[in-house]
Amino acid sequence: MPTTEEKYQQELDQSSKDHHTPTAGAMTGHITVNLLVHILKITQAKWFITGETTIFLAQNADIWIEKEYEFFDSINKLLVSEGEAIPTTTQQIREYTILEENGAAKYEEGKKQLFNLIKDFDTQLLFITRAIKLAKQEEKVALVSRLCELYGWMKEQIFKGQHFLGHELTEGLNTEEDKE
Image (cartoon, rainbow, N blue to C red; front, side):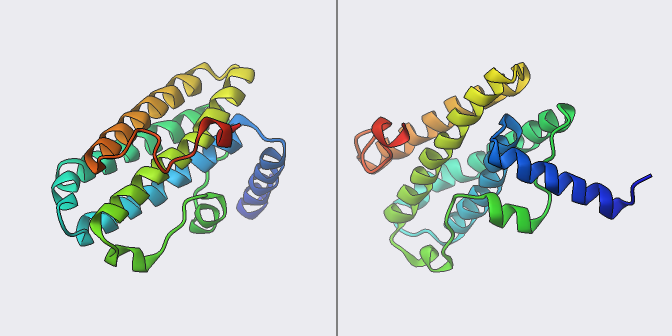
């Protein structure tokens, strides 16, 4: 019978293989760690943002945090029920996230902080659309459904944030050409 260390090494080996293939589980692992990092970034902005954007975040930050954690938890439960490995260490979080952190960002002007959070939503959509395609190919129906819900929710948050900032919907975000 394998030791706990051997089991974990097998998990790491499988995860590495899945990330190079890629699989729906591996791509979705990127999504869940991005959610965690985004929660931290929203929390930082909530505590340090100034100006008129404090009103927007007062109305939305806690909802965003709660909803992103709900998606994080439910998606990870789906992955585990599918027999997939999920990122569970801070090392894996650092390795798999695409979102950039900068402690000095908390001192930036409020609208810039909010726009950076909106851009993070948009960046996450790139992984979500890829994971949906892979999950469809692998016939992981429940995962497809939940990822589609996450996609729709994030698109709505982008709309609300861009509207508040007075931006066109796609202003400063990835274009469809960039996503291909």
